[in-house]
Image (cartoon, rainbow, N blue to C red; front, side, top):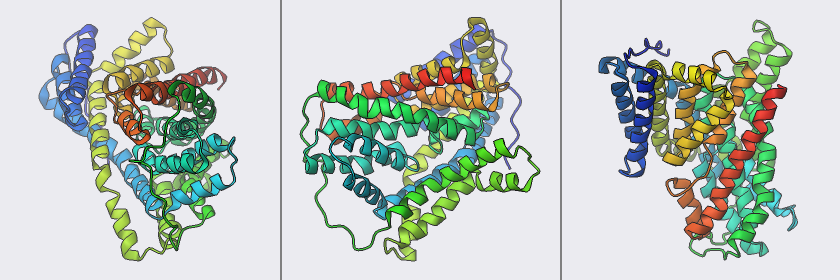
Length: 458
C-alpha cells in the first residue's frame, strides 16, 4: 500500500521566493549533471534539498516529502519499467527484432524503404527503451543501407524518428508513464491520443524530413566500426506473427480498457471490471512478458534456465533508470509540497497562457538545460500538476503529451542519445546537429502543433 501524501511543507516566503527556489534548484540539477557529471539520481536528490531550503521549509519535513514521492513513483512506474525491460530483452535475445525487420524489408521496394524503417522502429519502439531500440535497430539500418546501396540518412532518420516519437509520447515508456502518474491522467486515453498524435508526427519528422536531412548532411558511408558482420540466421527463431502479437498485446489490452470505459461506462458492470483488470498497465505488461517467454524464448529454442537467465539479466541495466525516475518523483513531490504548483497555477491564470503550452515550454527549457527527456518530463509534470486537477480525462492526457513533446526538443551535446547516434552513424558533431538534433525539434514542434488544435476539438 502506498504511503499517504505528507502535509505540504510550510514556507514563509513570497511567490518570488518560490520562483527563486525553483530556478536555483533546477539550475543546480543542471550544473551537477552537465558540469560535474554527477549521476542524475544524486543531482535530483540534492536539488530537492536546495529547493526546500531556499523555499524556507524545514528539513525534517523535506525527508518525508521526498521519500513519499520517491516511493509512490517507483511503486507506480518501477514495476512497469522492469516488465518492459524483460520483454525487450526477450525480443532482443530471441532474434525477434530481426524477424520483424527481415519480414517487412523483404516486401519493401527502394522507395518504400524509409516508410518501412519508420514502421519497424515504431513497432520495436512500443516495448523498448529508446537506447535499447537504438542499439537493436541501428545495426539493421546499417545492414539495409549496405545491402541495398541506399543513402544512410534516407532510412536512418525514419528509424530514429520512430523510436523517438514512441519514447516521448506513448506509454509504457518511462517519461509518459511518470507524467500520467503525476497528472493523474487516464493511461488508456493517453495511449490512444498518443498514438493518434504519433502517426502524423512520425510521417513528417521521419520519411519526409529524411529528404532534407540527406541533402544537408551529404553522402555518408556506412561506418565499418559499427556495421554488423553478415552472419547466418539461427536454426530456431520465433515467427513474425508471434513476435508481432506479443509486442502488441499490452497495447491492445490497454486500448480495450479505454474503449470499455467509453462504451460501457459503468464501474460495477462485469465487462468493464474485467477490462479494467486486464487493461491495467501492470497486468497488460505482465501478460505480454509471460507470453513472450513462450512465443519468443521457447520458439527460439531457449531452455527454461536460459529464459530465466535472460529475464534476470534484463533488470540490471534498468536499475539506474528506476532510481532516476524515483528521485524525479521525490523532486516533484517536494515541488508540490512547498507550494510551487499552486503558485504556477496562479501565474498561469494571470498570464492567460494555455496549460498545454505552459507544460510544453517548461519541458523544452529543462530538456535544453539537462539533455534528459526523462528529467524534463518528470520536472515539468511536477510543476504543472495542479493545473490538471480540474481537467477532463482527455485534456489531462493531452497535457501529458504536451510535456512529452517538449521533452524531445533539440537534443544536443549534453544528451547521451546525441553521442549514441553520432557514433553509430559515424557523423561529425555538425552533421549530427543538422540531422538528429533538427529531427528531434521537428518532432517536438509538430506534436504540440497537433495537440493544441486537438484540445479545442475534444
